Length: 159
Image (cartoon, rainbow, N blue to C red; front, top):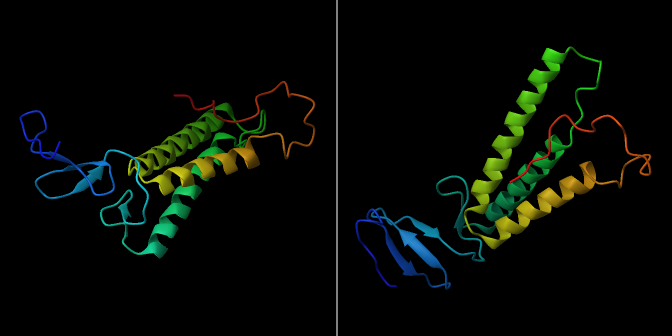
C-alpha cells in the first residue's frame, strides 16, 4: 500500500518505509512507525529527542531503563509501616506513590510506542532489574517465611 488518503485516515498517508515497517505520515511530514525497527535515529517522548546522535540515543535508552526501574522500586516500596504514622497520612502517601507510579509507567509506555527495539529492550531490562532488586527473594533476609502483614504500600499493577 503505497499511498492511502481518504475520509477515515484524516489526511494521513501510509506507506512501506525503507526498513520494511509500515509508516504513517500526516500533512506535516511527521513519521510514526507502526512496527518495531532497529536504529538510533528515532524520536522518543519529545519532538526531536534524542535526534540523530548515537550518544543521545544511548542516553535515551538509559533514561527509559531508569524510568522502568523506578516504577518497580515504587511498586515494591514500604514507606508506611503499620502503626508508625496516622492512617490519613499513610493514605496520602499511598495516593502520591500511586500517582507517581502510574505517571512513570505511562512515560515508559509512551517511550515504547516509538516502536524502537532498543527502547523496548531498555524498558524490559529496567523492569526486570527493578523487580530483581526490589521484588524478588534474592535480598530477603528470611526467604522461607511469608510475612502475615502486607509487604508493600501499593497493590500490584495489573493490565
